Image (cartoon, rainbow, N blue to C red; front, side):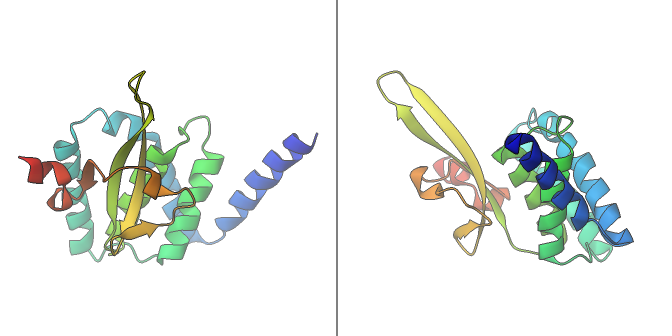
Length: 165
Protein backbone atom coordinates (compact mmCIF):
# COMPACT_ATOMS: atom_id res chain seq x y z
CA UNK A 1 0.00 0.00 0.00
CA UNK A 2 2.89 2.33 0.78
CA UNK A 3 4.23 1.98 -2.76
CA UNK A 4 0.87 2.94 -4.26
CA UNK A 5 0.63 5.94 -1.94
CA UNK A 6 4.16 7.01 -2.88
CA UNK A 7 3.29 6.90 -6.60
CA UNK A 8 0.06 8.82 -6.09
CA UNK A 9 1.81 11.41 -3.92
CA UNK A 10 4.63 11.86 -6.47
CA UNK A 11 2.13 12.36 -9.31
CA UNK A 12 0.04 14.78 -7.24
CA UNK A 13 3.14 16.82 -6.39
CA UNK A 14 4.12 16.87 -10.09
CA UNK A 15 0.65 18.11 -11.06
CA UNK A 16 0.86 20.94 -8.52
CA UNK A 17 3.87 22.42 -10.34
CA UNK A 18 1.74 23.42 -13.32
CA UNK A 19 -0.27 26.22 -11.77
CA UNK A 20 -0.16 29.15 -14.20
CA UNK A 21 -1.18 29.41 -17.88
CA UNK A 22 2.45 29.98 -18.96
CA UNK A 23 3.56 26.86 -17.15
CA UNK A 24 0.68 24.82 -18.58
CA UNK A 25 1.87 25.70 -22.10
CA UNK A 26 5.49 24.86 -21.18
CA UNK A 27 4.33 21.59 -19.59
CA UNK A 28 2.38 20.59 -22.71
CA UNK A 29 5.34 21.40 -24.96
CA UNK A 30 7.62 19.37 -22.66
CA UNK A 31 5.25 16.40 -22.84
CA UNK A 32 5.13 16.65 -26.63
CA UNK A 33 8.88 16.98 -27.04
CA UNK A 34 9.77 14.22 -24.57
CA UNK A 35 7.33 11.85 -26.27
CA UNK A 36 9.29 12.30 -29.51
CA UNK A 37 12.71 11.55 -27.98
CA UNK A 38 12.76 7.86 -29.07
CA UNK A 39 12.07 8.99 -32.63
CA UNK A 40 14.65 11.79 -32.46
CA UNK A 41 17.30 9.40 -31.18
CA UNK A 42 16.98 7.32 -34.35
CA UNK A 43 18.77 10.18 -36.11
CA UNK A 44 22.53 10.38 -36.31
CA UNK A 45 23.81 12.69 -33.59
CA UNK A 46 25.22 15.35 -35.97
CA UNK A 47 21.85 15.53 -37.78
CA UNK A 48 20.01 15.72 -34.45
CA UNK A 49 22.34 18.50 -33.37
CA UNK A 50 21.67 20.51 -36.55
CA UNK A 51 17.91 20.05 -36.16
CA UNK A 52 17.84 21.08 -32.51
CA UNK A 53 20.23 24.00 -32.94
CA UNK A 54 18.16 25.31 -35.86
CA UNK A 55 15.00 25.17 -33.72
CA UNK A 56 16.80 26.78 -30.79
CA UNK A 57 18.13 29.57 -33.03
CA UNK A 58 14.63 30.23 -34.40
CA UNK A 59 13.27 30.43 -30.85
CA UNK A 60 16.09 32.76 -29.78
CA UNK A 61 15.41 35.04 -32.74
CA UNK A 62 11.81 35.29 -31.57
CA UNK A 63 12.84 36.11 -28.00
CA UNK A 64 13.33 32.56 -26.73
CA UNK A 65 11.49 31.02 -23.81
CA UNK A 66 10.53 33.53 -21.15
CA UNK A 67 10.43 30.91 -18.41
CA UNK A 68 13.06 30.80 -15.68
CA UNK A 69 15.38 27.78 -15.59
CA UNK A 70 13.80 26.59 -12.32
CA UNK A 71 10.35 26.66 -13.96
CA UNK A 72 11.66 24.75 -16.97
CA UNK A 73 13.26 22.07 -14.81
CA UNK A 74 10.15 21.60 -12.67
CA UNK A 75 7.84 21.48 -15.72
CA UNK A 76 10.05 18.96 -17.51
CA UNK A 77 10.29 16.80 -14.38
CA UNK A 78 6.49 16.99 -14.01
CA UNK A 79 6.01 16.05 -17.67
CA UNK A 80 8.27 13.03 -17.24
CA UNK A 81 6.43 11.96 -14.08
CA UNK A 82 2.90 12.50 -15.37
CA UNK A 83 3.57 11.44 -18.97
CA UNK A 84 4.38 7.82 -18.22
CA UNK A 85 3.66 5.42 -20.03
CA UNK A 86 3.53 7.72 -23.10
CA UNK A 87 6.95 9.08 -22.21
CA UNK A 88 9.89 6.76 -21.68
CA UNK A 89 11.75 7.13 -18.42
CA UNK A 90 15.49 7.48 -18.29
CA UNK A 91 18.43 9.78 -18.63
CA UNK A 92 18.11 10.09 -22.40
CA UNK A 93 14.58 11.49 -22.36
CA UNK A 94 15.29 13.70 -19.35
CA UNK A 95 18.61 14.97 -20.67
CA UNK A 96 17.50 15.73 -24.22
CA UNK A 97 14.28 17.44 -23.09
CA UNK A 98 16.05 19.59 -20.50
CA UNK A 99 18.81 20.40 -23.00
CA UNK A 100 16.30 21.58 -25.61
CA UNK A 101 14.24 23.78 -23.31
CA UNK A 102 17.13 25.21 -21.29
CA UNK A 103 19.01 26.12 -24.48
CA UNK A 104 15.87 27.82 -25.80
CA UNK A 105 15.80 29.86 -22.60
CA UNK A 106 19.38 30.97 -23.22
CA UNK A 107 21.29 28.75 -20.77
CA UNK A 108 24.66 27.55 -21.99
CA UNK A 109 24.29 23.83 -21.29
CA UNK A 110 25.94 20.88 -23.02
CA UNK A 111 24.41 17.42 -23.34
CA UNK A 112 27.06 14.74 -22.81
CA UNK A 113 26.92 11.06 -23.73
CA UNK A 114 29.29 8.68 -21.97
CA UNK A 115 29.90 4.98 -21.44
CA UNK A 116 31.60 2.78 -18.89
CA UNK A 117 32.42 -0.89 -18.63
CA UNK A 118 30.16 -3.09 -16.55
CA UNK A 119 32.26 -6.16 -17.30
CA UNK A 120 35.23 -6.00 -19.68
CA UNK A 121 35.50 -9.78 -19.98
CA UNK A 122 31.92 -9.99 -21.24
CA UNK A 123 32.17 -6.77 -23.30
CA UNK A 124 29.28 -5.21 -21.38
CA UNK A 125 28.99 -1.45 -21.58
CA UNK A 126 26.46 0.88 -20.04
CA UNK A 127 25.70 4.41 -21.11
CA UNK A 128 24.45 7.60 -19.56
CA UNK A 129 23.72 11.11 -20.71
CA UNK A 130 23.81 14.22 -18.58
CA UNK A 131 23.88 17.98 -18.77
CA UNK A 132 26.96 20.04 -18.08
CA UNK A 133 27.15 23.73 -17.39
CA UNK A 134 30.51 25.40 -17.06
CA UNK A 135 32.25 22.04 -17.49
CA UNK A 136 30.53 20.50 -14.44
CA UNK A 137 27.50 18.17 -14.23
CA UNK A 138 24.28 20.18 -13.98
CA UNK A 139 21.06 18.94 -12.36
CA UNK A 140 22.57 15.49 -11.81
CA UNK A 141 22.07 13.30 -8.79
CA UNK A 142 23.98 10.31 -10.22
CA UNK A 143 27.76 10.42 -10.25
CA UNK A 144 28.76 11.17 -13.85
CA UNK A 145 32.41 10.80 -12.91
CA UNK A 146 31.91 7.01 -13.14
CA UNK A 147 31.58 7.44 -16.89
CA UNK A 148 34.71 7.96 -18.95
CA UNK A 149 35.23 11.13 -20.88
CA UNK A 150 32.08 11.89 -22.87
CA UNK A 151 32.11 10.24 -26.27
CA UNK A 152 29.81 12.87 -27.76
CA UNK A 153 28.48 16.28 -26.80
CA UNK A 154 25.68 18.47 -28.05
CA UNK A 155 26.15 21.08 -29.43
CA UNK A 156 28.61 19.50 -31.83
CA UNK A 157 31.10 22.35 -31.46
CA UNK A 158 31.80 20.72 -28.11
CA UNK A 159 32.03 17.25 -29.66
CA UNK A 160 34.81 14.91 -28.67
CA UNK A 161 34.27 12.82 -31.82
CA UNK A 162 34.91 15.86 -34.00
CA UNK A 163 38.37 16.09 -32.42
CA UNK A 164 39.07 12.43 -33.22
CA UNK A 165 38.57 13.10 -36.89
